[in-house]
Length: 274
Image (tube, rainbow, N blue to C red; front, side, top):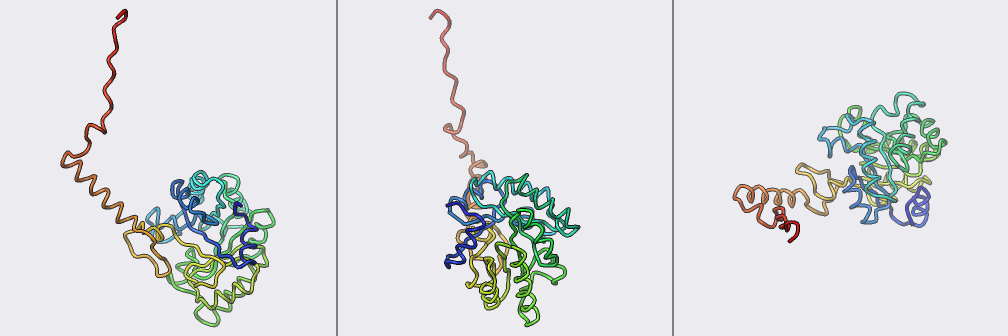
């Protein structure tokens, strides 16, 4: 059965783990969809792992719509969640609602994700409009400057209490799931047990209802440091680098192309009357 919002509640209720992974293009989306993930997140992490920025802040609505369209084309039938980028929902509730709706109307997404819990009424309003919302607590990358960097959250009693309060508020507002990023495992367990919404962890331990990873980290498609919470299941970068180096060598030595890579010669055409 295809994933939908109710799948998140049902799997949580039955203790079945949910699997979410990011994708930013049609080919990768097709790959992860064929692997039978429960949902694809078109993360604003595209700003960093796709476009090379240092944070998620620069990516725009138009760019996120572009990536979401590519993913929904590449993974037909997948449950796709689109990240609402920085300043797409902080500048007024009417504009936020319109922007959330654009992901469904123009890009084919099934849900949107909002970071933080600064405006619970906005979350509730988007849900009331028929747009499923995934929340995001803990390390919220769009607030990287406020947090003083990409640092784990919920490590003090006050910070943990705030996350518990925020999770309860997002749950009451109608979120079907909440990402918990870089928080202690015990705190994630308390959140998970205390709300109806499914918790999706990234650096939050094994007690969450499911996990999400950045696809580039999982595939090893990066030459730089990957975070502690990520696990490499392949080494796409190394394999790709070796392949391109082989191509470079073959072109420079004349080993490529060979006759088999050339256009076939035209067939001889008999003259009229012969």
